[in-house]
Image (tube, rainbow, N blue to C red; front, side, top):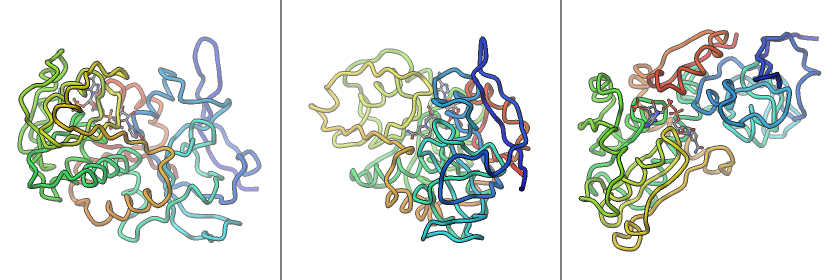
Amino acid sequence: MQRFKALVASQGQPRLQLAWQELGEADLMDGDVVVRVSHSTVNYKDGLALTGKAPVIRRWPMIPGIDFAGTVASSSHPNFTAGDRVILNGWGAGETHFGGYAQMARVKGNWLVKMPAQFTPAQCMAIGTAGYTAMLCVLALERHGVKPASGPVLVTGAAGGVGSVAIALLARLGYQLSAATGRTAEADYLKGLGASEIVDRAELAKPGRPLAKERWAGAVDAVGSQTLANVLSMTQYGGAVAACGLAGGMDLPTSVAPFILRGVTLVGIDSVMAPMPLRIEAWDRLARDLDLGKLAAMSLTRPAGDVVALAPQILAGQVRGRIVLEME
Ligand code: NDP
């Protein structure tokens, strides 16, 4: 039987233990598709899982990694055959089902998206769950009527993964963009992705008024907490804010004023349990609307063995853009 390497997280005292182990296919969890995983990535949630800073892992032992890209090795699912190139995002991978930090995975075929022909597996993981979530945010803004002509759009957590992909996508679609970042030294990077204005994130982190000057037609918010409250209070009449993240905190100290006096819409974005038609739409749109030159500019490639060291770095906001992990 074929052996493969996997990062196994187990419950230790006082904290979780992480060790690369050699496993066999029989060690994998139930599913109808076996995938040879060539690439994975490091998302913020992976950082939380690997450091134990939040209870992301809910079954022990666990192979962490909330996403992966690879090739089907065998399948009893009617939609997949050996050789198909596939992507998995979420569905509990790395939480309740063995995830992406392994060279093999066995999952439900109903969780898999066929890789768009335009992408390599490495590019799919340069996008990763962060980039697919950025696309879900863009789709949400579009559905709520935020158009390039509506006015400027703000992206918070701009130099991170969701933020970088959101800026690249929205710029390609013709939006005028403000990028809120704590890393003003990354202004040239963010302008290169398509931002025209850099906002110091400290401006959005202080308690503000229930309604402030209307600045943006819409926003993609990866930060939450006081930042999201201020973004809502600065969203123009009839605008929409896609909230996907909590990098600044899980709370939301806001009032109903933006909703009842300006008709602002707060749209919640979840990538983990998003229904399959929405996932397929998001990946199709990524294939159409993401500039691959910008994707390359925002991504670094690292060997899988670096993932444990990268986890605290992403939580500390020290990772710029996206990281691709080579699993082979
Ligand atoms: P990254 O770490 O790559 O990006 C987060 C960015 O947020 C940082 O780069 C930094 O940007 C900013 N940031 C970090 N800490 C703070 C803080 N204390 N206050 C204000 N800003 C801060 O993470 P991802 O892009 O992978 O994920 C972003 C968020 O989106 C996370 O909370 C993640 O859990 C969430 N997420 C949610 C998903 C969903 O399904 N809803 C799916 C994917 C991600 P800068 O340096 O530019 O200020």
